Length: 303
Image 1 (cartoon, rainbow, N blue to C red):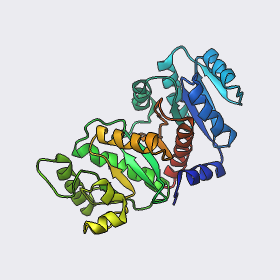
Image 2: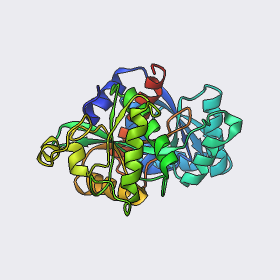
Image 3: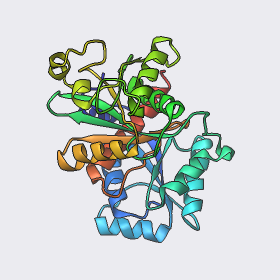
């Protein structure tokens, strides 16, 4: 089982490089992380977009690396070309460059490329908890705005798949809320209880679910013990399901941007993971996300 982001990167470096296609690659921040991933043997990059901008960005970084460059007319064409390469087996997974998320997500879900699946796309973030010295998966901090019960089932399924690709065979899922009691005035608590019962009945497979749980009682054994909360999940959660995008985004930014926790994120729900990072994310976070996408891509074959 992967225990840290550093271990995740180390494992990605040990395996043969996979081919990553970058849509609208003419961006210094993106290319900095791509260069490092190439330099450390994690990927072989294919850079798709405005060739002049890509070369100029490489010059600005003063980093020239062996990468195939495919020129296209515009950003939409770049997203489409990346998915076409993956569909043809000429690349393994995509990365978002300097283009809007909506453009690359539409290309990913385009039936023409056969990458779409029945479920929901969601953002899954792997975060290293310094105090506990372990990783936890957080979802969804950036894609689904107000997921209902059905959506949350799909978000859990995606996170479970990512967790299992990292060696967490039977992840523990904590649907987060402000309290542990089920309150009609707090819909997140009602849905958490429903999700837990669905897992008990094997309607959500390959994981255990218990909730609602507040954040401290989900990840801190001493907090759960102090409050008298027992069970498989309390204090030991592998996956944190946030009630909505606001809660997820605030928690993500508090941990990553303020506390400085290491992280990596991918969008999952299609046949391949998508590296879709924020412009505010550091080059290191982008690099970590590339390593995660590689591990997920290789891990899916074993599930």
